[in-house]
Image (tube, rainbow, N blue to C red; front, top):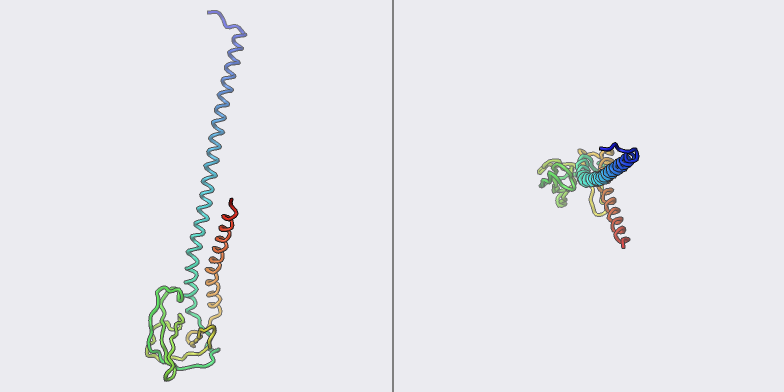
Length: 200
């Protein structure tokens, strides 16, 4: 076997370097494709995760809104109209009571009573303010105050249920949250409707 000439050796070395360069190029292309796939998957997963957190937040707000409303009604049962502002006071006989609860849109969580009272000889009224009658008081004679009417709703008061400003403020705050949620949902719905109309 004749020895390899320098020219043949250089040619084979050049071919080997070309093959090695081609192999390196293929490996780099494969790594680049893997990185692109990984980046795409990460972006998709990140987008899904972001959407998941968004919808979880929406669900949480939609759950908290009615709970806030019910909590507002619950707190409202522990404050009433100011008995000192009553135009007239009466001694009234409680004729009958009906139990409401344990969960109502007006009284929140817990039970309260709606009672019919007799004022004087002929005047019979039903008082349905949550908290006004915390228990069944049928047959009892109680003192009530007439605080007048506003928009067709008659306001009554009792010395046992004073007006507590801090509870009134809490009732307003808890009652505003559902209203804000409704306004936000209406705004989002309007924005989505306008967005669809703009699409060709």
